[in-house]
Image (tube, rainbow, N blue to C red; front, side, top):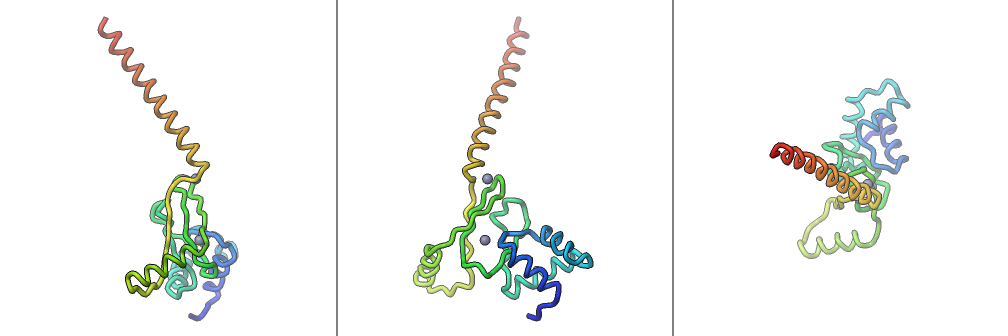
Amino acid sequence: MRLTRQRKLLLDLIDNSGLHLDADTLYQMAHVKDPKLNRVTVYRTLKLLKESGLVDELDLAHFDGEKHYYETRLKQEHAHIICLRCGRVEELFGEQLQALRREVQTQFGFEIAFARTEVGGYCSHCQVLRAQEELRERREGRQTGEAAGRGSHGARH
Ligand SMILES: [Zn+2]
Ligand SMILES: [Zn+2]
């Protein structure tokens, strides 16, 4: 694929960030570097970069709706561990993913074009917050329950 100026600009942004950036964030970043770039061009360019295998497109377990995220292909293959509450993304590198690939190839006689591993759940920070939220909800639920109970009790007299 010929790398036009805007393709090069976006590819560099993705390669250099090392993060998982959504299309709109990439548009904002590209727009700072080249104010003439519009949203449509950025979205179309991202699609082209993906189709040419220069970047990976991810949905990260849809933790934030239908957004798509882009990341460099320069990294070694890795699994994504996504917190469904805060959207924090961890990356797991290692021999296990290569072992999984080999097993799929042997067991199913499958020629793998790509492998994408996503694990959704809650990070240790969010586990604490979720427990607190649940406690608060239960307490509030009980309070309104008690108030209603008093109300009916009063009505009986
Ligand atoms: Zn979290
Ligand atoms: Zn990643």
